Image (tube, rainbow, N blue to C red; front, side, top):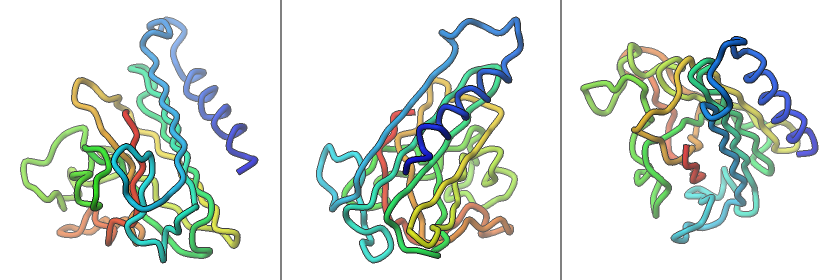
Length: 188
């Protein structure tokens, strides 16, 4: 993942450069950076895999997020060591990782759908949620970036969950992406 530091620096500079000249000082900027190596779930672990056939133990992920009221939230997910050629979905979820993928709760939504589970494209979409779908390249590396026009308020997210397939967008299935394969604790 030699490209990761350069990519993260570029993301940070892009986000900060997009801020208007009269923007609130840096105290309005929140930066989060988490790196984890996937293994079987253990309390306190940063990264857990629930399906080692698709997210092998020893593979890794890095999540970087920068947000401010003037530029919204920019999030990057970089992974290493996954199944080459596989297409994965990934989303920010409301709770931290647990013993099963379900422990991470639903997708974090800026405007919460009153119906749960949320499969309405009016709520389950990449503008109201943070979607980080990617395809692993021939060496098992993958990269995704999301930019939304909002930042987290008092209600925070707790993790990034990697799913079995790319995210669906059709009514009745919007936001779904198959089984929850792995989870990274991220205190957004």
